[in-house]
Length: 134
Image (tube, rainbow, N blue to C red; front, side):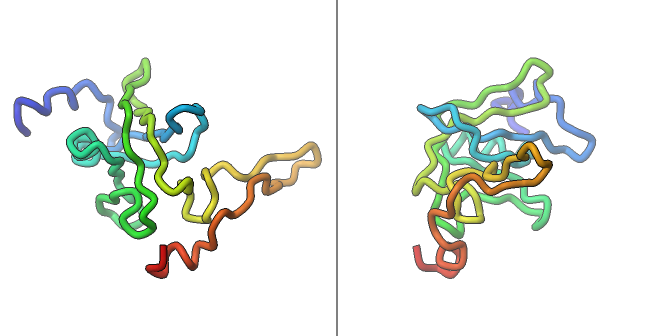
C-alpha cells in the first residue's frame, strides 16, 4: 500500500475484506444496483473514474461493463456515517445497469397480496448483451 492509499483505512471493511457499494444514477438519484468492493476495487474506481467491483461469485475484480459495454462513469464517491457503505454517484452508459437487461436491479416490487411483481421492462435481451453483440 502506498502513502496515497491511506484514505482506504477510514473504511470499516467487513471481516471478508469487503464493503457494500450502492450505485446511484447521477442526475436522478435513482438506485441502480448494489455490489461489493474490496480495497483494490475502490482504489481502481478512484484511479480510473469507472466503477470496479469485487465479484463474489467469480472471486475476482469486475470492471462494470467489461462484457456488456454498460460501464459506470463515477462522478463522486461517498462514505456513509458508519464508514461501512460506499455510495457511488455514476453515469450509467447505455442505460442498463442490470444483467437482466433492465435499467436497474430493483425491478420487482412486493404487492399488497405478498407477490413479487416485475415493474420495469427489459430494455435489451440479456442474451444479446452477453453474446458479444452490443
